[in-house]
Image 1 (cartoon, helix red, strand yellow):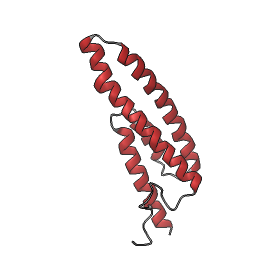
Image 2 (cartoon, rainbow, N blue to C red):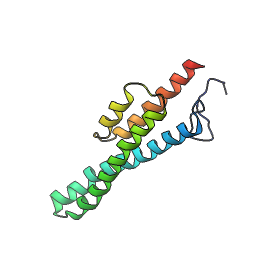
Image 3 (cartoon, one colour):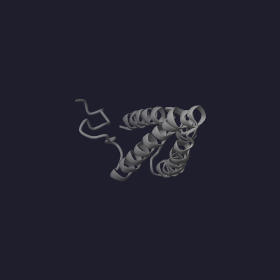
Length: 123
C-alpha cells in the first residue's frame, strides 16, 4: 500500500486525524446513519401506515425517535465541525442532507472523501 493512503484498512478511521477527531467523525457517522434510517422508516413505513391503513401509532413512535435523532445529529455536526477542519460546504450540506432521503449517507461519503483528499494535499 502506498503512503498516501489516508484510511486504515483495518478500521474506519482517517489516519491524518487525531483520536478525538476520529471519534467525533465516527459518532457523526453513526448518528447520521441512525437519523437517515429513522427518516426512511418514517417516510416509507410509518406515514403509509397512518394514511393508507389508519394506524397512527407508527408515526407517533418513529416520528418521536426521528425527532430526537435529528436534533442529536445537528448538535453532533456542530461539535464535529468545531473539532475537525472541514470544508466550508460541510455544515450547510450536513444540515441540508438531514432533510433529504438518503442525505446523511451521501453527506458522510463526500465528507470523508473530502477530508481524506485535503489531508493528502497537506502531506
